[in-house]
Image (cartoon, rainbow, N blue to C red; front, side):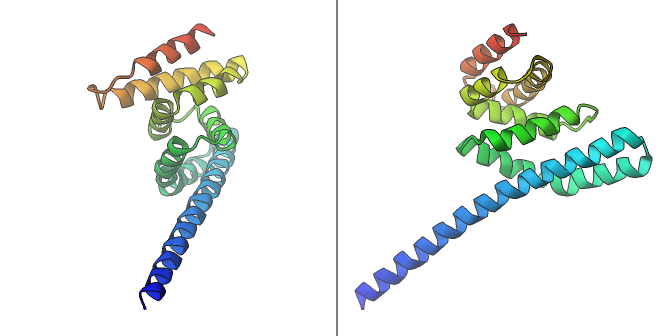
Length: 167
């Protein structure tokens, strides 16, 4: 009887872990889709300058982008995915007209937890894109690092200064 119980426990544990992995994969896929849709909606608004397009973009951002960003940041901090991050930077680049702070804060948090990988990624960007992403990274980093002044962010500051020196 004990063996049967132990086998059932292992089976349920394995099933649980498999489900968690599938959920993580689905959230990564959905984040990419949400980023891509935001890019499309923002491009449409920039071309039309219509109030209706702006409202559609704002509603989509609040209802879809914001909830996804928290999971995206957690996912990127546990495992940096350059393809997903590239889509995220495209979103930031196309949404340069936006006053939304959450994507910039997300960028800052990812920089804090994945400093070296973001450094390598940014170094490979075109100069124009690099300059803009570095500026956003600095804003996001400064905003997020001020929330925990007791933490040591010296490594991030050095990397950020080196990146700014590449400009």
